[in-house]
Length: 341
Image (cartoon, rainbow, N blue to C red):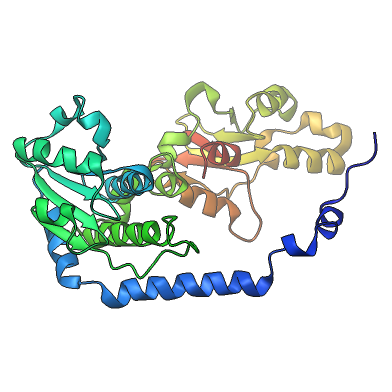
C-alpha cells in the first residue's frame, strides 16, 4: 500500500473551485455579526424585563419546550437555569402530549420556543397546558404569530434574516435564542444573589465545585494509612513504614501524637550520602525536619495544594493537625490531583 498523503498535500490537490476563500469566510462572520446586531438593536427590553420578572417570581418549575433545533436550545437553556439556581426542566412537546404533561402544576411556567411561532406540535400543546393551569410564554421571531396570540405572554426575538444563503437554515435564529435564554439566566442568577459557594454546590463534579466544596478532611488519609513514627525510632527500623504507605514520608510524633517533624525519602537519600553505613545507628529524630509545614482539617483542599507549592521549595504532603497540633491525618499532592483539584 502507498503512504497516506500528508494533510497539507491533500489540501494542495483540491481543485481551486472547492477551496473556500478567506475573504468569503470573513464576510460570513461579518454578516452574522450584523444580523446579531439587528437583534440587539431591535429587542424590546420591556418584554425581556417582564419575562425575567415572571421567572424570578415563579412559585413552581419553569419548563422549556420546542421542536427540532429550537428544542435543543430550549433544553440547553433549562440546564443553564438549573445550574445557576432556578428550578427548570425541558418538556418534550411530543412526549407531553402522550402523558408527560402530567408533571405540570398550576404554579408552573411553560416557555415555548419557535422561530415561526407556528410549530404544530407546540400549538397542539397550548390548550393542554392551559387546562393544567400553568402560565404560558411564547418566544418567537414573528410579532403576530399564532404563538403570540395563544400564550399569556409573548417575547419577540427580532430576526433580520438567517445567515443561510437561502434564508432557511436556522443558524442566526438559534443563536439569538441562545443569547436571549442564557442572558436571562444570568440576570436571574444576579437577582437571586447566587454566591460562588451556592454555584459550586450545583457543580460538585466540576473543578470549580471541587475548589469550593472539598476540604482537607474530605481527602486526607487517616488512622492506619498515616506513616507515623517516634523520634527515637531507628531509621533502619522505619524503612518499611516510609515506603509502604505511598506518602514518601514519615510523620514524627510524640506519645500524645503531637507533630514533632517529618522525614522524607529525600531526607533518607541525603542521610545515606552524608553518613554512609552509619545511617543504621541514627534515629529519625536526629535527621528529621523539625519545622514542617502543616495544615488544619477544615481548610479548603485547594489551599492545601497552594501551601504545598509555596516557596521556598514545594513539598508533596502536609501533616493535618488540630488546634492543639495533634496529627489527625496526612494529605498528599497525589490525593489532591486524584480528587480533581
